[in-house]
Image (cartoon, rainbow over all chains, first blue to last red; front, side, top):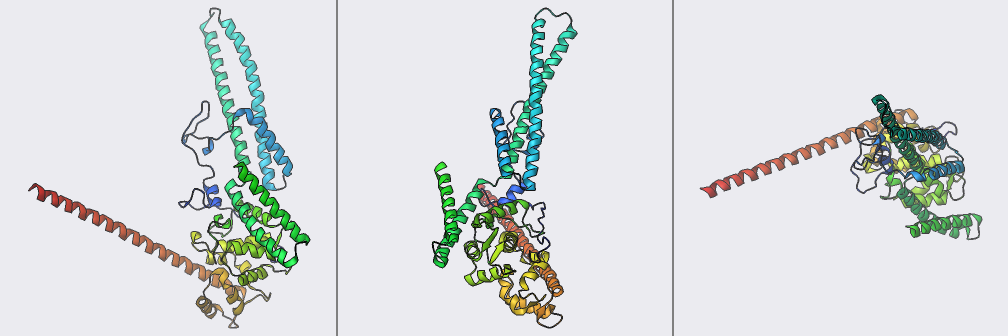
Length: 231
Length: 217
């Protein structure tokens, strides 16, 4: 910067200090996001979910989108990442992690299909079982196989939810929180509106810089209006 | 100089040890900078810069112009993101919530601060320049006088980098000592308060006990 060569202000990330009590519900975004990015809600175990001692997978929230929308989310994620072009290292890493997750999900889908096929076979077996059992060992074996498939189904569904949740997390971590974005835009709008008045008084209304600034201000105002009407 | 409460910068957080923003904070700051960069040149001109500082701080117009001239080190009439980031770190070091990190900031980034204050590019800071820009780091006039008296070893009323570095070390130590003493004072006051409360409670209990005894008799 000052000597035109080196990077004088290395961006270093340290462990943040312990949190102070917040005056409002959302204070010091940078610190709160780093120390407690996702606060865990009270325990609420869904069936088939892998539970940890703290009752949460990886200490994260349980706000997972419903499964039928998974494919739409994946395409959205892919589409949005594609549009942005992965210009930064940060985005490239995010995209890699999402692709890895997608591969996991695909594997789990194919495993589920195989399992369904196996369960169909099982049904045939169970049909056969309606005949009096020939030996107890065959019955036991079938029970074991049935329970194994159930366990596999449960683990698949939990893996599915886990993958779901990972995608959601990755998406959220890319974006700024909405309140912060709103505050940023409101503030920028006020600053730019005052700057526009200065431009008009100093260089006139017809100058291309004034017009450029005016367009930007109008764009921001339009965005604010859309946000208010949607709320 | 202080940041306006409730503004966007007020919500950013300066690391206490390195006096820098975290990666996430920088990302947010970059988005904010891009919102203000209406002409898409990755820079802010003097008008945009002026209105930005006027909005987020309590600096006067003259001080804002001085800050702009200081940051516009190559005199192109524009400020890039790196200078903007440096300025934001300086502004945030004044926050009460971060325990006033001005001395710590000067100590951690002494080279950059020295280059900022070396307006003429002479590799030394004159008394007048330092006096002009002392508001940036919340340095009082008496402190500055003392500082030049104690640390200007060459006696030419100009500080070279070494003298400046020694000053930052001493100022940082002094500030930490002051904060430690204030903390101890506060703790002592709290302890006394709790002891007083305890005493009042015991007095109250014994009074009630005596009253009950008298009533029974």
